[in-house]
Length: 164
Image (cartoon, rainbow, N blue to C red; front, side, top):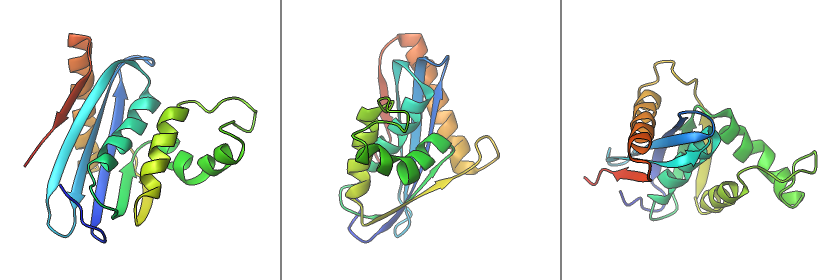
């Protein structure tokens, strides 16, 4: 999907891990509201955490955008939703340290996400309750779990993109 500046898109994301840490997977669905076009993407890693997979889902979904857009991101991760809307500003101000003066976990992914967020015309993050029947969240969960299972079975990275 090539989003054109000014278009409105919705991004649904989820991450999963078998053990924490352990093999993990992530899934994302990107919907272009102006055309109805829809893309799914998923992948995973053999040794990761649930929070890393949640962040990766958002990052990889935003990387599908080719131009700045108006984006609504839907995640069941409080860590992602609050991290990017509330906590990150203090982390940056403190040189990527927490209030306890410890290094921010997953700094590499937070930096990548912040860069992608700053490229958008507008971006809003919405928390949705996981496993509560939200259709796109449930589909993202299935994508993430499938990727996690593939990783566990093969012991290597996986990535899937549907190219319409």
